[in-house]
Amino acid sequence: HDHNQNLFRAAGIFPALCRVMEVHRSIAGVQEDACAALCSLCEQNEESQYEAFKAGSCKHLLAAMRHFEHDAHVQTQACAAVRSLSARITSHTMDSEIDVSDEIAVALLRGGIMQLLPKVASHIPDSDRGEQRALGVDATTEHGEHSDNDSDEEGEGRETETSLLPQLIADVTQILELHQHSHAQTRSHTMSS
Image (tube, rainbow, N blue to C red):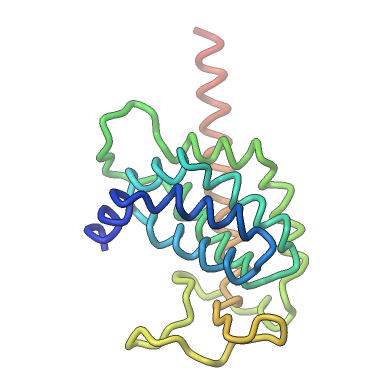
């Protein structure tokens, strides 16, 4: 997985994904797939987090979340991407004193993500509220094939596992609150020095 992430990053995937999200901002399926790609490409990969951030992924994720506020499929993938982008990675591989995930979290917080998440949560289908599956986002079988059990009238063929959305929102909220707290402590320590 890491090798593929590095190959895609070297090929310039992040500016391309952001451009696709910008050009096709009104097409839910494109936004959903782009968010899913960001999630997968940034998962546990600090260099990819950084390149995605530099390309403007935070701005495009927030735009997708705002534009498709009522679309559980887009929201599920967007929240998963936010989780991958803002997750702290314990083994830093970059030669930097700046925690990339902190920079990403600050950008998301400044972009208003904490005001978006309650709106997203209010649109979770009742059938999905009770299910709290922990990890994973894509509804695939053990052989990697997409299951056909999760499509809706508007997005036929869109098989995102929307029942994960409540857990993703909780994860993202927790991660961002930790970053927010850490950022506030760093600022107060800097100001008192």
